Length: 348
Image (cartoon, rainbow, N blue to C red; front, side, top):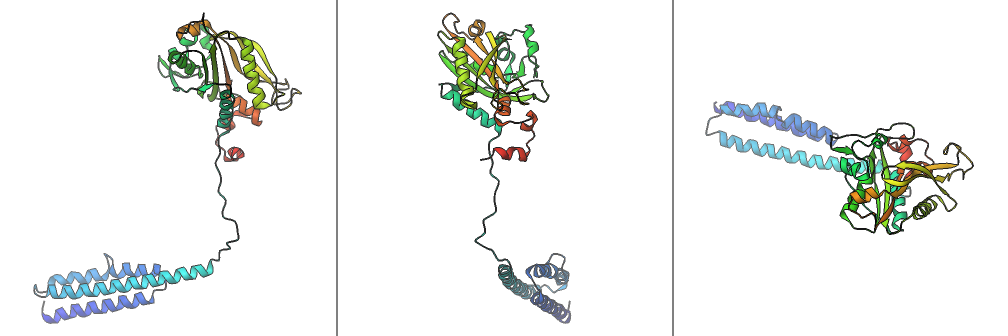
């Protein structure tokens, strides 16, 4: 390329930089300015096309021309930055004039979370029994067949297994059908006297208006010398009176559980209608709470506790059932639906 063509390339670039500078100056806002920068200085811009012609320059001309070109590009870049900051400042000032904030107005409210009603009942139950000297124990939700059944006087071929609709993991493990395995673990690991409370999630093949395949239980166990049904009824009476009110009554109904003897189901007088009859208690005046009884001597022996020296009682209660009664909730499935309209009623 001769000297004349070299000058033509430089003149072409001068026209380009002047056009870019004029376009930058006429940009009305920072967004438009950025678009212009991309157009004039981007990877597909006219500048890149012009710069490709530098390959035709003589070798001795390339360093001189390159230095001049870099100075022009740097000047255009500095002009862009100066204009960009100035436009941004103007836009911010204009926005502050238009967006008037009344600082006397209250700030935006935020929804506060709260505990699930099931968890609230568990906490209340635990606190009541802690006041009686009980300690909380927990255990795994996948249990061995021995802990879940056999240690509770339910051998492999025992007909009472029909009472449990069980989710089997394999031939030796199940999703626990009650929290009683926690009591078994406690008896094996600790020495009596014992006052144990075992809250947790359990699993059974139940699914109707009053049952769910996944629900919560709190089971209690007390082992000491000379324990009787009177101690059991006094303990459960104290619990329901503390939870539902001092006028609440407790009654026992004979029942059968393989791990207790004698066994009973216990009810409390309906705290909603006070035994007058309502839809919640099916007009009977009583609400079923759970099962209980004196611990079977075989259960104590299987956990290496001498039944001739020690006696005990055990009880279990369904947390969802308590929550339904306590809060007057019409359907157990509301606990599982995660409907914010339901849950926000328990926020604090």
